[in-house]
Length: 133
Image (cartoon, rainbow, N blue to C red; front, top):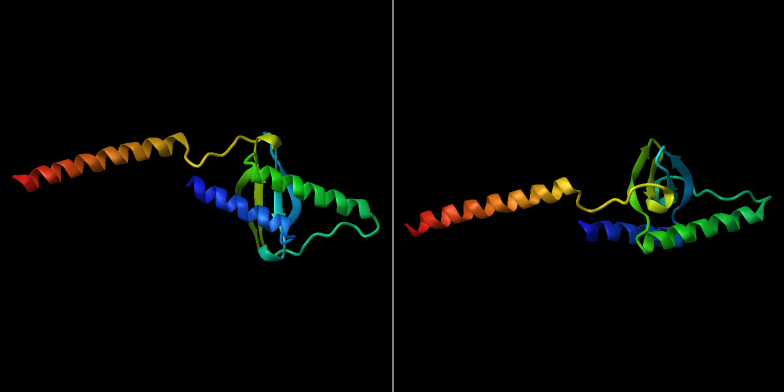
């Protein structure tokens, strides 16, 4: 699962750096905030900075580069999507934004797979014993 999550993060970096998605908004929660990323590839129009304020475009580009770097070094991750009638957005967040780091396997999943493995091994031993007899 960790590889799948890393692949999604890297794909998001590529989309950010190629201009296919851009920072569209911010979701604020009591714990912190997350960024909403969207663009033509997600069914949403690309957000352009105000033409009267050229500095705004530069700031938006730098924010996208910083978000891409944070994704690339594993400080933030894709934490979900937000689906609307016009498309969807990719939501990213993590400790730099005040949110907890998402792990590929939560402790409950690790325990579940450990118990499942024991059960399978137990069943295989019983079946192997019966075949011998």
